[in-house]
Length: 215
Ligand SMILES: N[C@@H](CCC(=O)N[C@@H](CS)C(=O)NCC(=O)O)C(=O)O
Image 1 (spheres, rainbow, N blue to C red):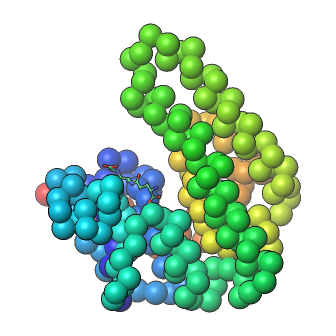
Image 2 (cartoon, rainbow, N blue to C red):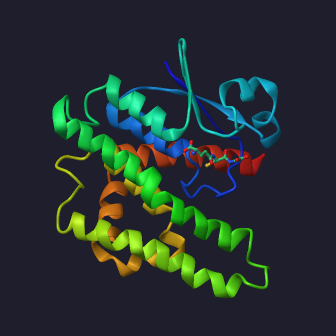
């Protein structure tokens, strides 16, 4: 049974944004049971965890000889070994992987810029001037994504590992309200969140946060 690492007490306070959520969700989609090793921030930077993850972050994934970091690599590893998260072969399979990369490499970077601008740079004198520029760069990415999705349920045929990652990345925007300007993307995210596998993953992550809060 694979083992993940996750925050012992998540800074997002159980909103489902900590990235072990992506891995939990993928495992739930394919019906693979898993264990979780919870880590404090101190544990994350200790040699035992640095051997699993060179940057001392969560999540990691361990299954026998396989020890992985980076959610893209972990989720792809799961999708390659279990049916249900991408087409079995050919160009359709490659396109599902392309959407996984697009989520992480094209859509997530400007969203992370916004997180940085809001959380780490809010007290800088230039912050108020910079924020609209960061927001506009996000819309520059969301507009073509929304155009491509159109009225479809998922990005390329059936739900795939690409949708799992894209919805996970877009969920980081919810609190900002920026997604509201793209109603079909809001509906896409809601559709993803309504999947039973997503709910199970969310509830499992929330249970960890709640247990840590009562200690
Ligand atoms: N690109 C990495 C990012 C991992 C990441 O940023 N993890 C966060 C939690 S969601 C973390 O461990 N933050 C604490 C830190 O960086 O010290 C991935 O997708 O796995």
